[in-house]
Image (cartoon, rainbow, N blue to C red; front, side, top):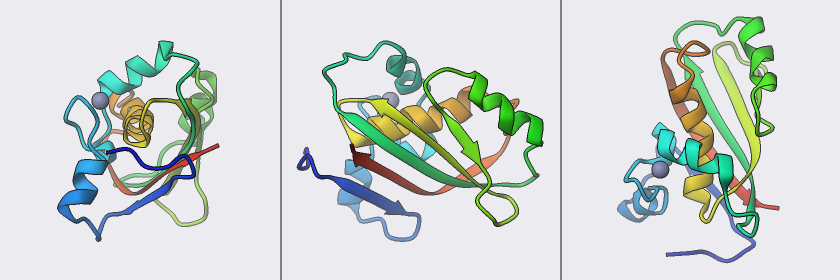
Length: 133
Ligand SMILES: [Zn+2]
């Protein structure tokens, strides 16, 4: 089920109806919050006609991410930014990506973390957002 182009979708970890879960599941059956490596790889050569999404994913970690690893994220492609807003052990991963659906945009961005365990080994995504730009 697709939403309108003005979509600004927000998921909080605590409010999840079955409809929410379906909306946030990518075509590989992964919930966007858990990330999808297939979506991450798919985002490498996505059709430029697909909509552009501003994606934000907040997550918590068990251990602090070294500053160096935070900075390393910029060296990866796809305009990913990993920042620490203010609270210890809370991080924000953001990017502008093209994808057919907001769920797949987010699944691909979180999939970056899944794919790069040397940056963060354990993480829990607490909030995700996908906004059409
Ligand atoms: Zn996927």
